[in-house]
Image (tube, rainbow, N blue to C red; front, side, top):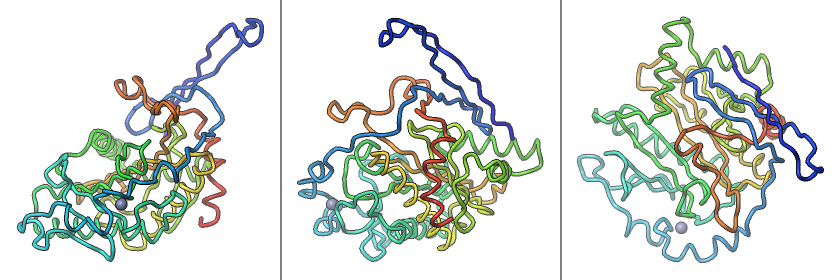
Length: 344
Ligand SMILES: [Zn+2]
């Protein structure tokens, strides 16, 4: 396992100190699996101002399509060949087709009837149950032999900085024969890694990260939690890898609870930095892809300027797919670790 990085230095004449010479470090890191590079730069204290969330949320429940008094009347239903009952439910959670689909089986799952749940009050039980609802849907598609039932995916955009336009907690649930870009690149990389080394990349990664401990956060059940070496997010990413599992449908209820527990630990840790929004994606192999391991990425999101609504993604990330992280992942890992210690 090679964790490659290049250190760089910038010299400026500093206007804050009579134009004295100042050296500013930065670093370029290469993801060991995909070769994707990420910049560690623009160093700042990872502390943001949260807006008044109660004020932000006030009034958004009026007209919310996911609230219990409206959801069954105004959300779409599946045709009978997909799901005869139209929508899939689990207690107060509802899964239905996305009105704006980005693949042929593109759905939304609400995480219960509550319109707004602060990030630190989302319980592991609620998250695990919403994942279970999605897995129940995936299971139905798999059983029916649907041709798109190849990669079973859950994305989560929580609160507006992450790209969510609806406050009411919900998941994007989809099943596709077309792997999304980064997941496809990772799958190709893991396949090539196994052909070359005879071992599983993800198992080797977990072993290496557990041994050095620099980015290791904890282990919950058979899920290992790490700070990503070459993060996509401005405040780093949390990576979870599940031992022995290569596809979503192989996750047990115990795995779902363990994953949900780790996610709430990450949320609690990032909340302390003033973060109140995140993206989370599943990364899965297809059935039989034993060269990979199921993993997920949790990436905190923020506005750089709350008042102007300046996002944390600019031209570099948007058009070059070159990311910027504002602290060393090893330092971020030290900040997150105490929150995982309670369960690890
Ligand atoms: Zn609502």
